[in-house]
Amino acid sequence: MSKFTAHFESQDFPNPVIIDCTASAQVSQMYYEWINKGIHVVTPNKKANSGAFDQYKRIRELQRKSRIHYFYEATVGAGLPIISTLRSLVETGDKIVKVEGVFSGTLSYIFNNFNGEKSFSQIVSEAKASGYTEPDPRDDLSGMDVARKVVILARECGLQLELDDVKVQSLVPEPLQGLTSSDEFLNELPNFDEEMELRRKGAEVSGEVLRYVGVVDVKTNEGRVELQSFPKSNALAQLSGSDNLVSFTTSRYLRQPLIVRGPGAGPEVTAAGVFSDLLRVAFYLGAPS
Amino acid sequence: MSKFTAHFESQDFPNPVIIDCTASAQVSQMYYEWINKGIHVVTPNKKANSGAFDQYKRIRELQRKSRIHYFYEATVGAGLPIISTLRSLVETGDKIVKVEGVFSGTLSYIFNNFNGEKSFSQIVSEAKASGYTEPDPRDDLSGMDVARKVVILARECGLQLELDDVKVQSLVPEPLQGLTSSDEFLNELPNFDEEMELRRKGAEVSGEVLRYVGVVDVKTNEGRVELQSFPKSNALAQLSGSDNLVSFTTSRYLRQPLIVRGPGAGPEVTAAGVFSDLLRVAFYLGAPS
Image (cartoon, rainbow over the protein chains, first blue to last red):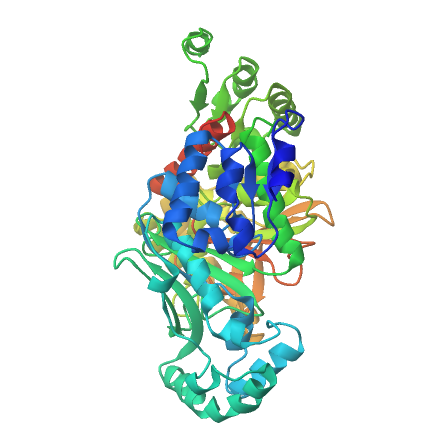
């Protein structure tokens, strides 16, 4: 790794940028050193921004002081303009009240289809068979990936949140968390269908639907990941497919939130988010707009 | 005016920016001269970008060549990230197929409330009484303001469209277009309620609702402003309040579009759009991000 960065220290590259397309915590630990050497960093890797707050703060402070750029739009919603929209609200002096949304395409798909026709376990199995889930669906259902996105957004709002501070309601029933294989898990999951169906019906009698959301609540200074029910008039209830949706409630957008919606995962839209960050580095360094 | 710009020619202001907060075509005709003098331009004024294409092209070419910035986010949807999102898609190589949306808060409010409970003319009168419309509601209902936004977005997509090329379906019945006062207009409008109610019912029997949309259709190379019906599953049908909504269908966002939604008019969110453009100028000139 150090051989690699040493190469950049020469004057051959006036504006070096490293694009970290790994999901590795180890690689993310290099950002400070890279930025310190004058190398801009662009990444869809969530590890640095959802890792230890002190480390994150060190990177951000160095980056601001040294005028080196560090962009990570694709960490939340891939190519959707989520981080940039939030940042622009904050920079222009808006007060963020709440950021709430469906941040997982997999969990969007599962709950958009959980309408009483099929059991919860059936939908999870179908989602896995169609390649919509991680190899082990528990990695989606645990809510930890959503929790990382909540931490990233919370810090963008100015909260000093650690991943451990996020209250995560896992959708993996406790007795199934220790099972070794994902096949075992999928075999056992039907035993918990009744519980989930009761929750669905409970929402339905109030004219509501279930959605698995991440929430940054600036007033209470907390991050949450939970199954909530929403009235059908709410934009979150109107989701379809595997779309992500983020709703920004702010001083300016108080009665009606600012909403961004669309596919938030997949190689093409993630590459687009990374590429637009790279262009932003170029513009910020003086490329003609 | 020339006295005003002469002041900027001194070296006292290393990075001058003019923010044009008028709606004047005359002021917009100064942009070329200002940019030529090294003055950046930020504006919510739609006149330059929806005026003669040649003039617009001259400004854009000069601006690119001279590395002077010209931003106009607030011309469409006020503070909503619409122009910036579209531009980022285009810059990163996406192919725009269609941009479609409700670009008028007034017409959003009118059709979101046109659900069979009240007549069309009644809703228009109430909207005027609540201050939601222009002093003469025909200025909203004519569709010309939406048409200007369609031209701005179309040019952002690479189309060489003039305002006259946009097919605009006016909601002002032809016999009422020549009336002198808006009171006369509102008195006569009920005579056309039956026609509008028939259109509404026609949509309703197919499970659809009416929305007044602006469309940039890149395939057919055209811009349209028209009353269309949409199935209730469409995000446009799910609008509420006086929200704007823009849906970008592209090569990357083909089956499920990228959607931005929220309040798209009013002094506070318009000022926010202008301010975020001003900060963008600062960042592009090297301010720390």
